[in-house]
Image (cartoon, rainbow, N blue to C red):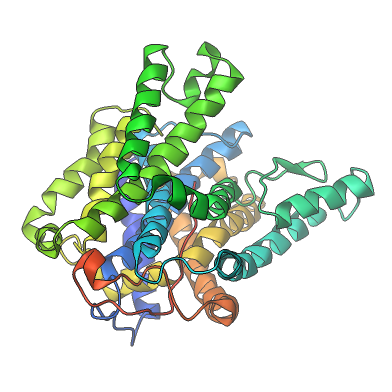
Length: 418
């Protein structure tokens, strides 16, 4: 029997999800003259990868009672690499905007636009999470009223908390809030970061991040799993270095490189004959057994991301309308996938024990979860996101940045996974 963590089930999952997405995308025609279609479509695949990763985590959560990494190298890698590319994407898009002739605009106006982009759909998801928590606790307050109000306030401030009203909530939304929190911190400090690392200073910034990483590696510290080897202070330094030095930093560096290099060079990256290079870089961390969220993984993944950001559509995959639609609704998909996974899996568990399902039956069930989630995401995108979104998107690139006349379409900028 095939193991439940086999990559074969990922193929079943992604084919089923893209089939449903393709049906929902009838009439949708991505216009490469107006936007960077591969970059928009990539966002959808990243959100799908996060659901696949969390689906396996959820299965083992039913078995062990703990939300933790699943014993599968493949699914752990596709999950972490997707999170890293979400960070790259945010940094790349907004650093490109900082480098554009019009710049970022007023700081207050920028933050307001980011709030209007992220908050509405997020608040819908938070409302569902709180409703689930209250239902699971029989609508009784387990904690003091003020403590509960404080927990609710943290949710609405994008601050991740492990429990609400005495109930562990990590599994309810797959703990995606931590990535949104990092995104918001990046937005808050973006103007300051641009002042500090404007121009070629970004190269020095990444060099400093690599130096810090090298220093910590000499002390035997390279990832958070090395917690027992160091103090909390050094762990904080490592975290800031990896996610703000490499995660967002590499995206900023890539935007600077694209801004400076000739458009002819970027045209080479778009050629399909070079596609095996980014695919090999994407697979390299898993093949080489690189630690998750380690600097070598970031460096390999940024090469893959650079090809897609330049317009490489991975042999046409990122130009297909089903993938493009999934990218368009990816933010709502990302927010809702954990909630739908939780509700549907616990609902099924009342009738048939999840842990008793065969791998084929479990992944067939996950395909249904994915189909329901993408349908819900499309509804949420249309009736919630679009009502508050700005008419201009950071994903619209300038001719100088990418080498193509992208305009400013209405599309989502996303926050990240895990």
